[in-house]
Every structure is written in structure tokens, then in C-alpha cells.
Image (cartoon, rainbow, N blue to C red; front, side, top):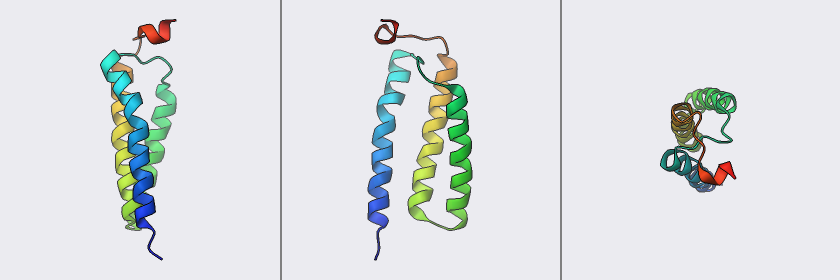
Length: 92
């Protein structure tokens, strides 16, 4: 039974889930609550999982981990850039 479509729907949900975090980080220049250490570990885990997915040629996990690598990279870069940025929402 072919279930790749379920995996791709899951991948789409991951993409949707990251959007508010990335959008807030960039538009508000606010890194409040973002752990560089946690996202660094997430990046490393995504890199390892991507390597595995690529080696077994799994299209769902290649797509998922490709996006995870990109999203965590963006979050790491902007969280470092706005390391002390706190928006009014998080000052409260």
C-alpha cells in the first residue's frame, strides 16, 4: 500500500508549523524564547536524518529533512542576528 501521500501531507504540516515562528522572528526582529542551542541540535539532527533519508532514497523524508534544514538554518541565522531583540508582545 502506497502511503507517500500521507508523508507529504505531514511534510506540508511541518512547513505550515514553522511559518509563524520564522515570520515573527524576521518581521518583528524578535528572538525571545528561541534557544540557539536547541535549534543548533535540531539542525544537526536534521542533517543526520537527511543523510540517512538520502542514502535510502526516501522521497518523503528527503523532502521533510530538506525543509527542516532550511527552516532551522533561517531560524539560527536570524535568531543570532536579532539575539537581543524583544518585541512588545514578549516584553509584557
